[in-house]
Image (cartoon, rainbow, N blue to C red; front, top):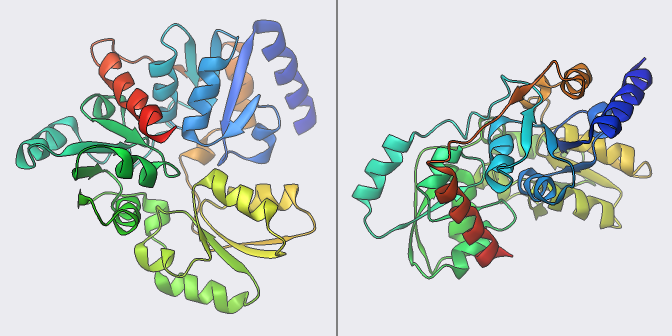
Length: 304
């Protein structure tokens, strides 16, 4: 039974001194055995603060890389070796290096959903919850925002005093949702509030009652006195919210909002990781780690 496997994982992680992190997009059975569940940046901060020397990251590769950037002396294991992020892998170092030449003097602002190599050639990183604040606070007026066009559009509309150049990138899961999808969901559930992630298209964002990061969407729904919501981000968030708030009703914006990379990790993968026979240890080359770390430190400086 699932419960039996969970008990073995809990016992092994305690015995071996292993700290388990799970992104909010993980399934409920994995979240239940994690020491902390949250969004990508919160996971990295928790990894750095953890007393344990071994971290199991139940998420995707860029998250494990960020943990290693912040905690180079810790062993970081990615729960499934094939779990990547299409958005993080959309742009190469060579491509962005050429764009920096095309836009000299522009501050390169990179979403945390990027590879360690891209963070290393960026001026500052941002999260979906801090992007507006950081772009407003950095001294540069001219900004090259990578890689997510939709998040960048949301930031540009919120910070009109800055000159923000966007490239052609984004999350394939969020950006596939159309205005028609949002209108259909609102018509199907007329009493529900629409809560969406800023990785969604601008025309979807404009229809939302609330726009925020994964954590912000969850906190809004939990704290609201409303009883019905349409969740416009990865479908596991609707499932988690339904577990946490049984007196409320949560609908998915689309049945297609499923991240296949996140769903690669299973409870058995986590068991194999804590048993020492599964996952992949993630390393970040020391030739790029300090530069990548600086972009994250700037994120903390400007965004808190």
